[in-house]
Image (cartoon, rainbow over all chains, first blue to last red; front, side, top):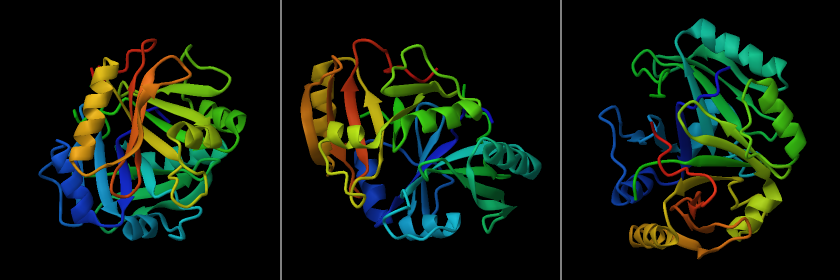
Length: 137
Length: 137
């Protein structure tokens, strides 16, 4: 696994409110943003995304009980479904817990999740619509 | 406030275990790492840092009750104490809650915290020892 972050997703209670707050702070949205998800460009070449908290928990397949669920995820994007599976396997070999096996997802990509020893969620994803694999300059 | 992230800090229960996990995953530590904090280099020019969960809560001045405390923080580094105060004021003007006013901190820098509408913590910091203000390439 490369030490690279593609996006950070914050699971928010009120998406319009969170969106408005970050806009007031001066963060600008990408045209790929949708009503259900805001993609904010960070100068580092990565994205800060705002997504409903319940939707994020559902996407990872974890209970939104406020205890174990960290309310955010770190994403590592790769170039193909096979690479998603390979990185998930690598993480498990390193001691991660597989939270969601790699699978085709509703937005048209392929992704899975692993949890680090503290339960922090990493999504490993292939997104055929947005190239986030070479986010670094 | 510039839309820039300097580091992401995960508040972990067992620092040696978390450190070992990320090393097995292939993340490398910076020489600035210490026994109490690990700085892992990300390709984007930003850092992933691992810090004790209780220490992180204490640093932000929030209770580590597992409920409100998100167990991680996003950091935005700037070039001077005056800039820390200015960004904190800007965030408050945008609707953030001031969690900790800008102040000199034990590690020799100057920092403060604000919370976004969901309680996610942003640390705004001046670090005279590590230049993280131009983390982007």
